[in-house]
Image: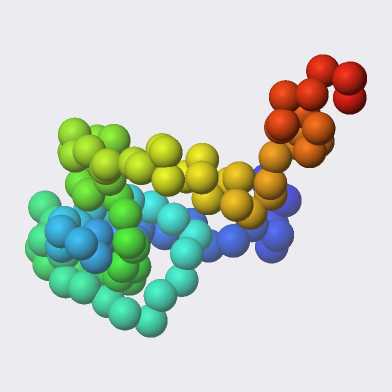
Length: 97
């Protein structure tokens, strides 16, 4: 590795904002907040990064379902972008083809 061009890769604690779950990993992210973390060598202070979603709160991993109004989404699309069919085709005129 070429010296001086790589970011600092260090231990960081990530915390889920929704559930409060925390986990220790390594990252290049910087944070001014810190947290005390119990290690086999005693309590140490690590940078703390609070994130919105982790596997602890993501619906795919938790099995939670989100109700999606697909009919409403289609109608919203048609209102926003209209129909690709011309006015003659919408009336059912075959002569317009």
